[in-house]
Length: 250
Ligand SMILES: Nc1ncnc2c1ncn2[C@@H]1O[C@H](COP(=O)(O)OP(=O)(O)OP(=O)(O)O)[C@@H](O)[C@H]1O
Ligand SMILES: [Mg+2]
Image 1: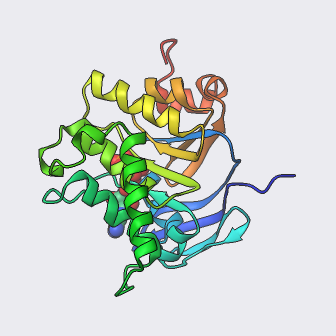
Image 2 (image 1 turned 135 degrees about the vertical axis):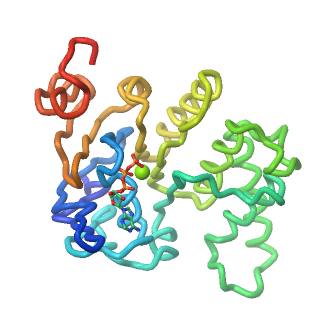
């Protein structure tokens, strides 16, 4: 039996009186493009924050490729090969695309290392260029990130995560705010990437999700309402009632 990619075991996150993630359980297998959907406030981003160590859990365990990573420091989880993008874009506008990627690649060797060997410096350069190439950002490599189009900022954001050489990439609404052409380009890149690394995408665009996901987890009120293939989710009576709207176009 293969080791699960990610195990969420009775995980709860309480903010004061609010249970943003409420005794949630699910397991994701490797080799699939996973999507998490659910209404605003369902707890999707909070769950990413718990998985990446950005927020401490209130209770429960999280395992990544069989290892218990619950409440480990962010940098340790990152070094295990787990990377994420943020719902709010976070690139350095005053640096070029290549410099942004170089910093992200270098972070793999530890932010506090005062000196970096020539070998690691060269490796970070190579990694930054490889990511630039993979995402089609090479023509913009020496451009300031502040001058990129919105779609290219979103790609760079994915690039910052990729530069850390993750095994699992968590994407939080990567196409939010994009027009149709940018959406198409970004979605195509995400599909390409999913052939070589595992991806979990939080996304509100249901059409995109149903087109690209192998498996969908539906969250509501901090818990899992349903999990299955796009077909199973589209035909799940609970999902249709609670989320998609119970009509034949859902
Ligand atoms: N740091 C925090 N402190 C207090 N409450 C929080 C915090 N982060 C999130 N919440 C609350 O937890 C609930 C879940 O929020 P979360 O951001 O996880 O939802 P989401 O599913 O990502 O929603 P959206 O689709 O709008 O991004 C919301 O009610 C939110 O207001
Ligand atoms: Mg969110």
